Every structure is written in structure tokens, then in C-alpha cells.
Image 1 (cartoon, rainbow, N blue to C red):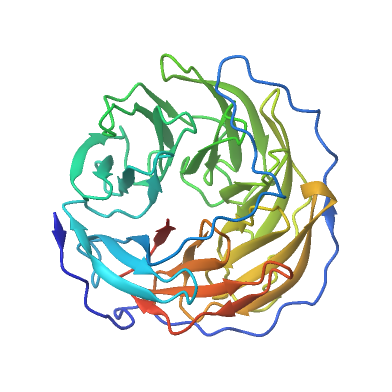
Image 2 (cartoon, rainbow, N blue to C red; image 1 turned 90 degrees about the vertical axis):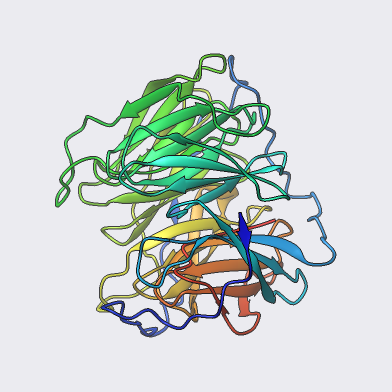
Length: 406
């Protein structure tokens, strides 16, 4: 069900204090370089997705474009469901367009490759994934993820499988996608039972599950075990077989992994120890090799930062990191074909607790969902320099924790 546009809301009360930006980042830091992995080979049992070429011109949309906003419905001051909005691809201005109700705590969203279905996690004790038809916004159905607190969902590039990560249970679920776009009965559920939890953790906490750019492997990032697991997905059965593990340093708390467009490197945001890591990736084996931890650009003595995630430009030239505690976005230059990140600067996000960032399809806008200020901030992206410039006043949206611009 779609209701009218959400009213504007101010900052949340009850302990959700607003943090201010605490100084500029260091102008330059040492560059972390990772040796290139073995040249990629075509996977034997999975469809290949060609990486986007740097020379490809960006898509130039005209007229207002859809924007979907994830939120928490069970929290005080939260939304009523999935937020609907439109954004101006030139000016970056956002206009509210209603709400898809009937989805509980839709904290993370993903769109099917064909653009006709939107998926949301229901981040509750009895976790679910829900499908919504596009553009009509009809709820197609929900399925149990088999765990508690699902916080991430993604679609396999084949369009046949839906992947979700149960944070509280430390498990990863697979659902087939039916012809209608609805999720089918779960085909697999893998719990991260080893290695033991890292320092300060009580158990595994699967925070993300994605498919490598070549389509050959599924990678699950677990904050609780300080591990990124690599699986082979059986394309006919929808089952996962573990093939590799990458360990971060104890207590790092890996949260989110983002691939470089060529698929040979990826960038890992470590939530607990406030570091960023360049990882080499071998498409043939699925092995991920983390490099040396480096700065998130938030300086020292600024309090807890909790970096959230990376976003990488389609041409592979720049990477951005959302810093929740520091309330900033850090800009890196990507060098050596993806093997190195060079810290350039950090800018205030003009909001509180940027939990999720996303680039528009043409790469000219960056959206930041600010959880504690209940806003979405939009930045213009300079394609030559990667610099970020505010596009205007933040858009008010209840407990905004995820944005998906189309």
C-alpha cells in the first residue's frame, strides 16, 4: 500500500544526540598498495558479468528520477514503511512521493537487475525479505530469512537469487526469485559457526552479503568473527559452498565491502577499529587478501567513528567512505589500477550518523542517509576531481538508513 508523502521531521530525541564535525582530515597519508592477484578466469558454473569499462559514458537521465529510502518503523520517530521520493538529476533536489506501507523495519533495500522489483529486509527478530513491484509499489510477498535482524540484501547478477545477511544470527540466506519477482522458499542458510568471535563480540554478526563482479562467488562480511567468507553459489540449486576465508586483524569489526569496477580489488570498512583496508581479489579462486589497515580520514582524538561503507565511482577513479561518528565523507583517489587508496580529504555530511551512501546511476550525485538527524543529504560529484559539493538543504525523512537512487 502506498500512502501520501511523509511530513518533514526534525532531529530525534531521547538520547540520539547530534554530533558536530570535528576538524579537517589530514591532507595526505601513506598509500596502501596490494599486489595484483592472478589474472581472472571465466567461472565454470556461474554467469559472467562484464565489469563496467572506464571509457563508457555515464547514463544521462532527464526529468525526476525515483529514490527509495529505507528506515526503521519500530523505532520512536521512525517511518511507516519504505520512503518514496523523486530527485532532480541536475539540481539534486529531493521531493517526497509517499510511502510503501506494510513492510516492517525496511532498513536495507536493493533493486533487481531488470529494475522491476525492489527488495527490502524486515530487520526484526523474525527476519524476512519482502519484494515490491516497480513501478506500481504492490507488495509481492515476503519470506523468512531463517534468522534474526537481517540488515543487508542483494540480488545475484543473474537475477535468479536473493541473498540476505542476518546480523543477530550471524547467518546468510539464499532465496530463489520467482518469475513475478517475489522471493521463493529459502534454498540455503549458512551460519558462521567459526572462527570464534573477535574481542568484545558475543557471536557472529553477518553484516553484508554480495556477489563478486564476475558473478563467480558470493562474499559474506561478518563483523563478529572478523572474517570475510567466500562461497560458491550452485546456480541450479541455490546452495552455498565455502571456498575461502579472509581474516582481518582481531577486533577490526569488518562491516562493508565494495569492489573496484574491474573486480580485482575491493575496499573494506572496519567498523570497530576505525580503519579502511584495500583487498586483492582473485576471481578464479574467490580468495580475498586484505592489505594493511589505513586511516579513515577522521584524525585522532575525535571520539568513536564507526565507518559505515565505501562507494566507488563507475570509472574506478575515486572512493568515498561514510564516517558515522565523525559525521563526514572521506574522499580517496584510487591508484595503481585499484590497488591503492590515497586519502584526499573529508567533508562534513551536513547530517548526523551517515549510515549509507549511494551514487546516482550517472555518477553525478551522491546520497547520504543520516540516521540520527532523519535526513538525506545530496552532493554534486565533480567527475574530474571527485570533489563533493552540497546540492542544497538536507531532505527530511524519518530515520533514514538507506537510499537507492534509480
